[in-house]
Amino acid sequence: MKTLNHLRQELLAKRLDLHQDSSLRDELEIKISQFLNETDANCVGIYWPIKSEFDLRPLALDWSAKNPKKKLALPIVELNKPLIFGEWNQDTTLVKGPQNINEPLLDSFSSKIEPDLLIIPCLGWSLQDDQFWRIGYGGGYYDRTIAEFKKDKRPVKTVGVGYKALEVKEGAWRPQSHDQALDLMIVA
Ligand SMILES: Nc1nc2c(c(=O)[nH]1)N(C=O)[C@@H](CNc1ccc(C(=O)N[C@@H](CCC(=O)O)C(=O)O)cc1)CN2
Ligand SMILES: Nc1ncnc2c1ncn2[C@@H]1O[C@H](COP(=O)(O)OP(=O)(O)OP(=O)(O)O)[C@@H](O)[C@H]1O
Image (cartoon, rainbow, N blue to C red; front, side, top):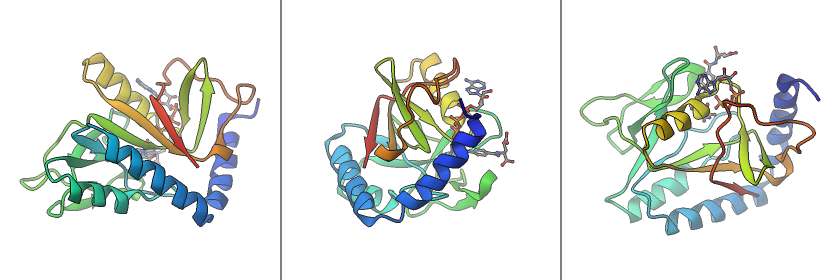
């Protein structure tokens, strides 16, 4: 088995290539839009894309415009803690968090909110034991976050976004005890 760091670097290099393919981006756009149009979630946690992650902000804003009572949220990083989420609307002030990722400044225009759906960017993913697993950058943030939601019995649906070509087979990676399975993967 390759080291996890090596696997991550390989996945990142492949994703840089896949991200150039507009037909794959179009497919993700259609599939995620369809998913959002059918969801009954009221608060959707998305992400501010970095490093060749699929940019779902435009389609999320479209969904938001069509569903004015529903909310969008972006993650806020507190180092080595579960993520918290701040509302993202036209009045939200964005500030740079760790890794230079834009995140909401919690103030009178944006408050902390609790998503009931999380859309999560994946570097790689794996289907093992009938469950979807995510490989991310190695901070463990989404694992901690999902674990906390579960501990508090807060219902949240988790959906990974990735590429078919970045599926990692069982021989190359196994989920560890801290890894949290996702409910669904949307792939192109
Ligand atoms: N677009 C996007 N936003 C996201 C994530 C993501 O995967 N994609 N995250 C998904 O989790 C969270 C941020 N992930 C982070 C991962 C690492 C570090 C970080 O500070 N890393 C250290 C090095 C850690 C180490 O090497 O052990 C650093 O850069 O100094 C910060 C945030 C929340 N926001
Ligand atoms: N529930 C948790 N509590 C404390 N630490 C955790 C928890 N979940 C994960 N971690 C820590 O996070 C580290 C990285 O986890 P992992 O390699 O699965 O990250 P990742 O899911 O790829 O990263 P990210 O979500 O940031 O993109 C683990 O080594 C573990 O120590």
